[in-house]
Image (cartoon, rainbow, N blue to C red; front, side, top):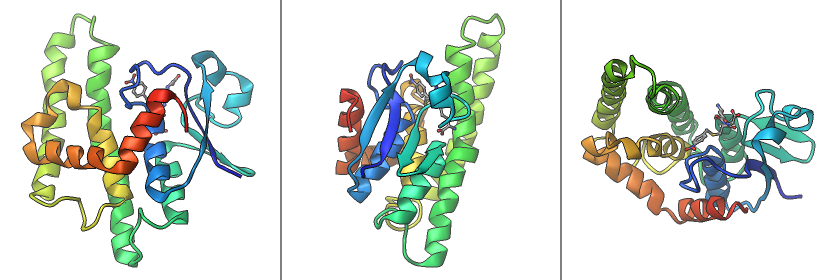
Amino acid sequence: MLPTITAFERSPDGGKGLARDTRVRWALEEVGQPYVVRLVSFHAMKEPAHLGLHPFGQIPTYEEGDLALFESGAIVLYIAERHAGLLPDDAHARARAITWMFAALNTVEPPILELVTAKILEGDKPWTAERLPLVADRVRQRLGQLSARLGDADWLDGTFSAGDLMMVSVLLRLRVSGILDEFPNLAAYVARGEARPAYKQAFAAQRRRLG
Ligand code: GTB
């Protein structure tokens, strides 16, 4: 039985691949696992049927047999652990790749989300003009640190891993701000991720809202 994931029936980004089903699709494409997509409306997300799968009424979710998961990080890790291709065999290298997944989600994504929130949800507040540069500088600080660690390497720790998949996914959200381009090695890193055939497949599929 194919795994089923959920995605927005109508993504607010109009198909730019920024919703979090894209990272799950990307992981599935990297490991060559076909999947089915169930599209969910904003209304249906808050209904009991979906809340039974996702306590916070969001996408993505992942169902396989009697297993139901939520949280994109947990889903990608589950996929990476069960298929070859996204985590190294060596135990230490594997632990480091998982560390980068957590770093993407816990250390790099939060300031990026704060910037998105400040612009989109709080853009009309009288204090936004004063706050925005502070929030943007917090993002720059994180990116500066990440950029220093990446240096001129292609990927964060040797070969491409689920850590890179997650980090690229998180950084993609920043592109529209222009901040990513202030760090040419990170912009090139993101472009390398996007150039992977699996990412292209995932991007095309989310645009068509299909698996
Ligand atoms: N921590 C969870 C995870 O990683 O899975 C967060 C899940 C989440 O934020 N889901 C969002 C959602 O379902 C979609 S991805 N929102 C509906 C709701 O909460 O009612 C976030 C997202 C939404 C829109 C854009 N966009 O338009 O660009 C980008 C990302």
